[in-house]
Length: 300
Picture 1 (cartoon, rainbow, N blue to C red):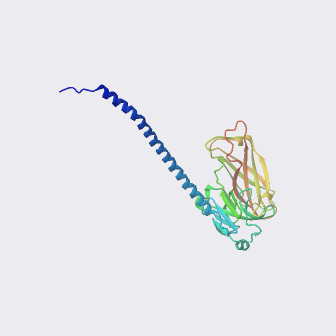
Picture 2 (cartoon, helix red, strand yellow):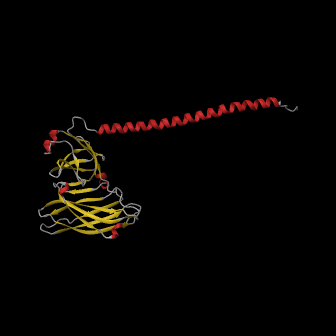
Picture 3 (cartoon, one colour):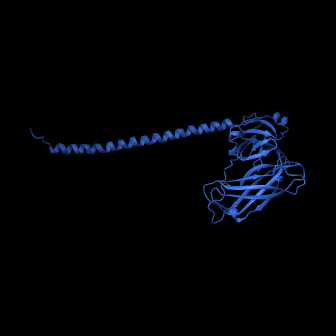
């Protein structure tokens, strides 16, 4: 078999030809890679635009119709709106001026405000005539939110929301939003004429980190269900240093006393817990003051 002869000149020419073609192939690969990346980013951008338009459409669907005199909504589907013991409806809820008149609500302005304690929306003049509307989340999700005990059954606390020109979109108050919980209990009834009533308070660190700070304190607030929110009675209780530091899962308990109203009736009471930050704080309280549930004081 004859050996294969390779012309060196042809070999050099082939090498030079490949070298000339190599940059072209490299650029072609770069262009393809860039095109893939651009297509990927375009897909992500298009997806985000679709999601944004869906969110905008959802927001538009929630905005009250121009003909609605007053509009009430909530971030929890199925939330009900009450005037005392009367069920007005389920969110999203549109009320006409005739509805306001029928319910006995002031029609001077359709705007609503949330009281500073998160117990109700109200129509009317703050500190003077506050006609209160209370909300109730569905039973299936009730334990996720702070409850209010009332003469008409359970209601749910409101964590602010969005003020509309003719209404309010409520954000319900999660029970675990602070990384700590405060729960209070009161006697089943309080005898009329008693000087004081006992309120039992339990603080729990439900987070997975140590909670520490300084100047721990509790405040108790109480008043009638028709009392303007800023006119409630309150009392502040400075606490011992042991309340300033809790490991995950740790609890603190206290029995506090408040003055008893001098008129028989049903009153609402709740507590707030504060812990100030200091230089050695590892974890204070997420999002500020911790709110408790609200319980009834039945003065009889």
